[in-house]
Amino acid sequence: MNILLKINGIDKAFPGVQALKNACLNVYSGRVMALMGENGAGKSTLMKILTGIYQRDAGTIEYLGQLVKFSNPKHSQEAGLSIIHQELNILGNLSIAENIFLGREFTNKWGGIDWRKMYAESDRLLSRLGVTHSSRKLASELSIGELQMVEIAKALSFESKVIIMDEPTDALTDTETDALFAVIRELKTEGRGIVYISHRIKEIFEICDDVTVLRDGQFIGEKPVSDLTEDTLIEMMVGRKLEDQYPHIEITRGDVRLEVKNLTGSGVKNVSFSLRQGEILGVSGLMGAGRTELMKVLYGALPMTSGEIYLDGRSIHNRSAQDGLNNGIVYISEDRKGDGLVLGMSVKDNMSLTALPYFSHLGKINKEKELMAVVDFIDLFNIKTPSPDKIIGELSGGNQQKVAIAKGLMTRPNILILDEPTRGVDVGARKEIYQLINQFKAEGLSIILVSSDMPEVLGMSDRIFVMKEGEMTGEFSRTEATQEKLLAAAIGKLH
Image (cartoon, rainbow, N blue to C red; front, side, top):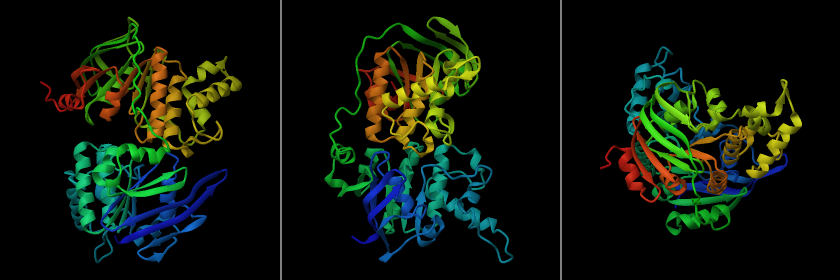
């Protein structure tokens, strides 16, 4: 196999943390290399060293047979290395074409922008990805999944020899994912090398040829995908067998806590359901089905136009998110970085933000009481942080998600809504989050679990309902539910 990129023996330390120690990675021509590891394993740090964001302390990088040291991302990009980041870098006030060729616009002989050529080339790239929008469309008018496809089109525009894809399908629909995989297969035939970073293990077996695993910043091994199973790959990542991936517990459910009747609002039509004490109610459906909108109408972030909501038999109408909080309904957003956390603030300040009334008296915050509560949650959730004062944006995705959930629980809710609680979270942290969910369930908390991950919904829920285009299209008990039934209800073909 022809090696395009060889990273060998990379070390990188930050104050108090050895992020990488002897990390290695090979990228081969015409093959997809999965880079796997739990959150905090060093994947992002290694990619930042490769693309020149960080400089290594030790080790070598060999690209196209030459030793290289990229000084910045522009340097690595010009050499033929592109990275599609998990965090989108799109300017909403510009068109798709302007985003794709920002800083590299085509010019005519008079030095002006050649708009015709730029739109034509952008449309060609979008067509290759199965995107039907005109490249003249403003980026602000696109969905998250469509913005992800624009990022991928931008990477393709560089004609790079090595393309790094960091969680590329995180916000894509199944159709968009299929289109992306078709493009990856085409890139392989052109001899390009792909580094594919994903927590979706099933995708690794569908699209990748080889796997490299990092654990605690160290190289664990490289193997062909054909030599692995999901279980053996997980064992390599976590260093132990991961039994019972979805640890459902059966408890006697209590009285009905929440009853929703014919709820209609922004993106939601005539939805009815109930939720009991100590129950996990799963909500399934395809992207755009209205699941998140339903949750936001329920707790007051989006307007409710008709219907009834009863909490412990009492009629409520949440006209704002604050009303929802006051009524004991907490929503943990699918977009923890956009809606759930303030990345520049500390772990402590994020966690206690919505619960400050519990630590305040006559307008003054009891700092000692606040800190004790935060430390208790850090211990309970096993949040890996050197200090409560650590900036949360510097923690791994799994630890950020735990803080987001702790933030909601600190307000002592009756109803906990978890929207995509394990998106972008590694298998080890997922298991910890599931165990915490079960602990809350056993203590009588009523939980709504919204997830695009069907095995997660099937594995953790006591009951499941499915949505399509803002309406409920099916409801199943735990014993009735199957992946086939959920999908049939999601596409409106349930008989």
